[in-house]
Picture (cartoon, rainbow, N blue to C red):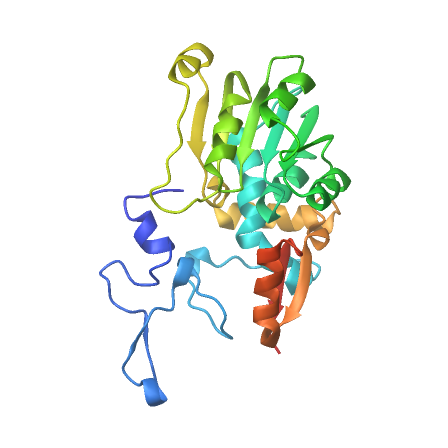
Length: 272
């Protein structure tokens, strides 16, 4: 969902819309401005500021907190991009560029759609192997060849009806657009550094009429969508446990290093 002030309210400043701090420090930091609304929720704390309408109760049989934790961001983003934006139809092909938490969540979601082919593209053989285990019908090692050619080979030269770029690579984004069939849709989820640009073949755009759409948080309404994800999780149709590795909070640096090295898909910190 979007409004004119979406970025200011939801991204990384952690301030109110008027620029004021959300909380003030105590003790030796008494009175200091603290920005406790990072990404609309804050993080790395025993308590968090949360808007009432953005707080989603989980009812029904209990679900481990470490499996609920990724739903609000990465899983919601990948699954929502498939369910809410791309909405593949029977017989379609979906190509996911990037087999991280968001990309693999998209692969998991695609299993609950009528697509015929789910293609995962990545540079890491271990991530591609995991993508296949989680439901990808085909995988493409982007370090071994051109993913666009591979997608066209898989689709008889037509290209894919849907692609999803989750890696943040502008090169992968260009490939995701070029891999589309006529009238196909590319969802853009990956976030490269500010100011990043991608070059596109304009005659190709005119001839193939692709649709390129930015997707944030799966274009979802959390109060409606997160309960759906929880139900899928309980039903065994969204095995988030295959993505998660837990770390005690004091091992936060170890978790960050493992994530940066690609050794873990979704590290989750547990508080005592």
